[in-house]
Length: 282
Image (cartoon, rainbow, N blue to C red; front, side):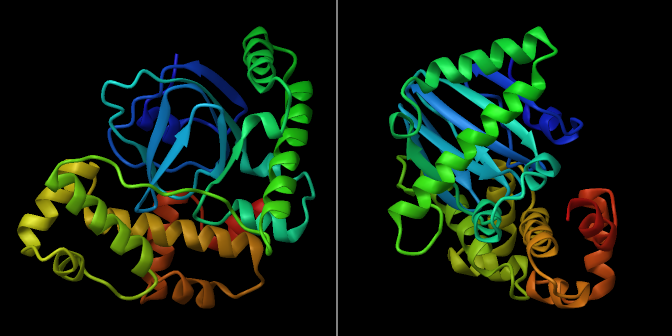
């Protein structure tokens, strides 16, 4: 049985594998895991950091769950897939090249054809699911998952002149309200490093602030202010792990205008101060 979005955010970091229909996601969520999605049939449509992302049958998506993301309504399309979460601490222990860690922690997923990675990827994911449920095989599953992730990263490096994620963001049929909510999320994803306000977000879609905030909360499931904060914290987490900048420099780079608000928001979201987070995950 798939976890709902609240359960994923509150769950302790651990290896888990789920198969079947897409999980229930009432709003964007985030989690400190590396996530692997394999689509067996149908498709997955994500709102990922403000952009729409479509993962088709036969494709694998790999991304860090720290960026706010949400599965959107699949409509009449039946979807079957596999979901794998690997704790970020485990991934960082693999001693991946620095440039590959940076790719994993960026705000766009890597999407690749499954058949280019493993001959029978569905059977591989099914074996992980069985082994995790059976218990006692987590070490073997983790080793195989590490090898699989390395294959995805190697393929991404070969497919682009410079290492970086490969993802196709596509427009989806949707109502006018959903279009405007997505446009607001996109505006936040592109501008959260600047001192933007809810009024700025509303102005970007030519709505009054009150109307825009109501629409955003109804479609996305969270307030604009919370969404901005999650994007900023996700960027701060990435910089804490991948750079040697001071916390003051990271706070500024992530869009926080005051050190006090950075520490308070970071602690609320991550449960630990920035310096402790850095020591723990590096």
